[in-house]
Length: 557
Image (cartoon, rainbow, N blue to C red; front, side, top):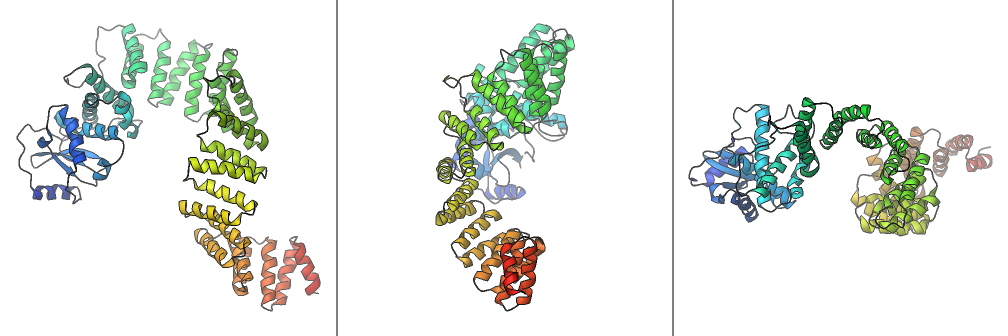
């Protein structure tokens, strides 16, 4: 993010002229210099934490940077920002980014000569000050950490920036300082080098960091220290596994679960958590094994959650009958009448499994039960609508598609499905209206053009139908049905030569299409080529077209 030197200069601010602005923004490939009040006010709130004024900085929009950055140029200190970013987006996320950039100035950082590890360290120092500033500005910890959702995870060895887990720990550390003290102290990211601490003290601090502070990096360091000093307490592997999972180090977590299960093979709780981690990495069969083991060890105390999770995994591997059994068990454990339990997920997922098994009537029952608990989920209405559609209950399906569109008016697929239901009820103009909305939302989806064209064909509006089939062919030049329908439409309008061309293309793409031969024969007959027509009808007859068989008898012998 920072391409220029980051230095805090405790010297009076020099006069700032347009030429300097021109040159600086030229460096950043922009020509926008007008600073808005929103930027000034936001920066002032951050600077007030350190008793600084905005006139100690030059605030400048440079719109080819992502969000904000701190820099020095010709002896002046700058805060640069993207104006579009400044004028929209989450308030606390913007404040955290500004605070981070100011944190580089406050800590007197310079990027000159940094190694990768040193660069990551100064980023954490800036994060720590930003966390402190956020607390002072009244942000909660969760509001402070919203910005970290944009940070990458994983190995940061070859990066100038630390991974998400470390940055969360740094923001959290600074935020805690901001809540506890009125003066900012030198940043301290992780302090674990107290040789006087006992194994138990490291363990307790690690647990506090894990569960209370959500300081996962600090917790991991403490648990590592415990195991360095003593391996007698295998419980440490469990809490370290939880910590690694929180840092998205799933494979490291599995190694720790394996170690603790070696010595505690009758603890269902451990299998449950290992199963969750296996599911996180896509090892569904391994996760199912662990959930099976957890249930086997405590069959009378298995929770709704474990059956729900196992059911989801079985659905993921297409074991829908097994999934239905688990979802049913989940519902039975916590009865529907229990107001404290939201069982809409269990009914919804069981309905999905029944839908996949084409048991649409029973699926509708489950989706209806799910909607009694939660009416805000559009997909539940869509699934129930699809079930009714497959049962040819088109009027009922339209009611649910209507509700789904109310909840999510930008889902093109729901308009597409509703249009098909209307078509089946012969509401052709209503179907065209829905296809048109779907096309406006997703203009490059050939199936919608084809369906709209087919509806126009049904209304005998052949010219309009041809326009839609043209769009299909432009988007998908090998669409057999579009050539076929365009050819038939042309024949209906008397363009028999055009019809022959399109139907010939359809035959090239599918030489076994009896309808294409049959209709091409009609077009040839219309232009006086009875011999060619008979050849096509004979071929169509051999492919099973009974009308063509009759035409051969009547006209070709």
